[in-house]
Length: 298
Image 1 (cartoon, helix red, strand yellow):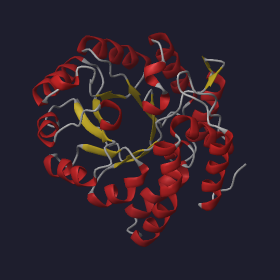
Image 2 (cartoon, rainbow, N blue to C red):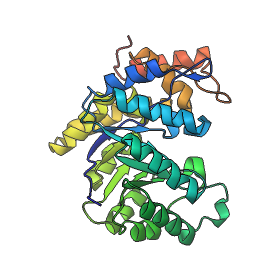
Image 3 (cartoon, rainbow, N blue to C red):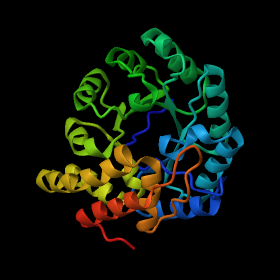
Image 4 (cartoon, helix red, strand yellow):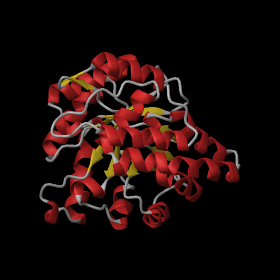
């Protein structure tokens, strides 16, 4: 298949809920607004989309709403990884028929002790052979307990239908090792805004960033400043964004991200149980962090 250049910034969009149902009108509004922010595309059904809490039909409907609401130049990448090879192929091809451009496939993790290099290479190769759109590997050891090895990535990057990786490990040294093992057209994307500056300097093509749900233009600005070789300005903006990113990812999680979205003109909606909503004191802290970074609250 043809190689895709994924250079740019992608928000892994949230799935807004109201009374435990997907709020499609909120989702459509967010997608329309994000599409005008300078981002390259959208990640649907990633970790921030509470993918693991959605039924198959809900996933299909979320992708449908996203595709209908996004501007036509947006790349739509879907999180269609399941625990079994068979289900991953089925769901990915179903979403391909809907118009998804590529798929982000998380490492299967339930039988983690058996997910060695051999198993992961066979899994991803089989999926890549049988799906109708290109795939990206998704390395997120914080959630899965699985870290895709440099050796496994090196082998998988040679598959013609595996076009990239989202690495959310936060390990910049490992990112460098990944980059040393792949061809220049292979899309290595960083999965945390806290490492965006360092990742881009090393040679990553871009980022899939939770922060881009609330501050897409700031993320795009860091990306563009580095493309323009304005390293000092990029570094200063990156440092300003680090406390905000930490708050809406590591510290307060998806409920904190959704609350921040509500403060900044987006529609975060509610989280789905068993996740808990932010408490009042957490909300006040998020406001304080945003204002401390010079972000204007609506």
